[in-house]
Image (cartoon, rainbow, N blue to C red; front, side):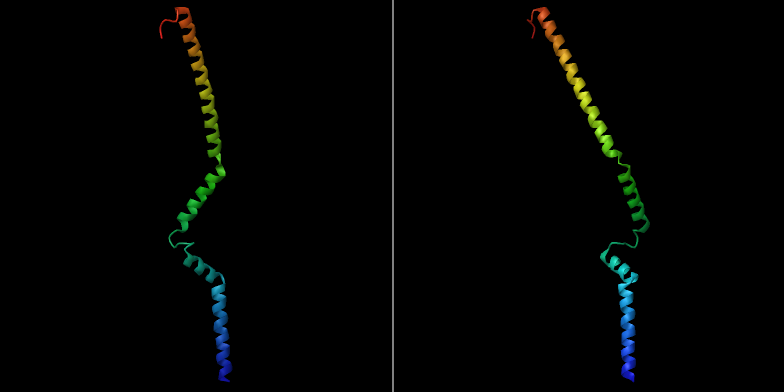
Length: 102
């Protein structure tokens, strides 16, 4: 009869160990071992994750970059136009003055 008692105890210990290591405690222990969750990174990690999610959801960075690129292109066109006007003015002055000065 003692063999049946030992076998029952073996089964009980085995079942308890399996449920412990395959349940939520085992998964948490596995994450801790893998380093996915640090002991001191709780609130700080959550705060940083929230800030990153907020910045990604906001999304004006790309819009602001596009706006700056459009304004820069417009300014380049204006500078080119102004340079052409100034060059035309110098050409007219040279033609009117005889073109001797260089």
